[in-house]
Image 1 (cartoon, rainbow, N blue to C red):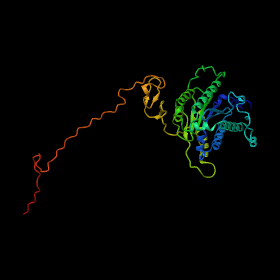
Image 2: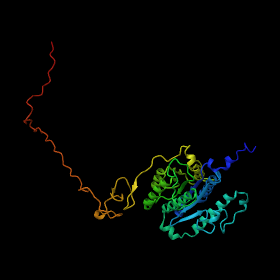
Image 3: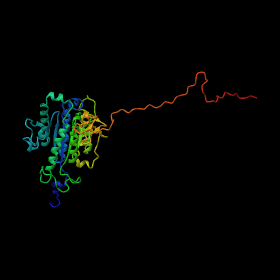
Image 4: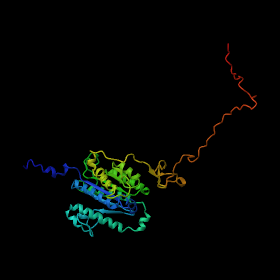
Length: 376
């Protein structure tokens, strides 16, 4: 029986898919969630998010998850405990201080109960330490660019630790390490739950994070809860991620909000498959991608602009003195680029007018008179 048991097949991790790391970036702008509360309360969104994360962790015992809060003035580490915190060694295996598990947690799977308690306690502490003045200053802003940078930094370290030897500071010089067809030791992806729409000031940082994610092979998934995120849509398209927008619904009615039920369905059906499973699936999408960019001078989304030949900065109009605002390089503009074209009027043909007395110059041929038909 030992010879045909084949238990080693299940114990060998090389035969299964690689571990999957999911980093969730949650937009926690209080003003944005206040506007969404009639159709999508924050509590319902957190419940759907926790179910989604539990499903990700239940797929494989080697799967990992991280939750970051993109707040109005900072990026907060929600789950697990901060890497430099006192409970970092447990990796979220213990309940946070001050957040005792409820009585019904005894019947829950322990990692799920820890996840729920940690997220609830971390977000409660985050909102408690947010002043009304900070909310008023950043009405519709959120630190998505900083959250993407922190997520990519963490993913890069985890991918380095997953290499043979586990040395994070040592470059991967193994044969075929940069081969796109090589089997990954850790697949990673980022899911952004966006509730704000003002990201114009973070365009450069978001584009830098997009290029970094491309280099690391990390997909950036975006689920837009409100507004239109042009730059995040471009990041999702460039990194082979999924970008979708939650449909709108009318407030009111009894029972749970339709958007709350739709949020869970979107998360489970479109965003649960990892990079390994997506190779055999047709990923959904939001259709056409808006590839317009933003000018560096006024943060406007433009179709056409002036581009610096040195640093590729884009301007909606030439800056003062024709000097690039980013690299101080003189901009070369075509001569008379701002001169309105002179329109030459077309010559009008003179029309011949017949005098009133009928003695004017004519063609010399008289108009034939009516001729009656002869009768017999």
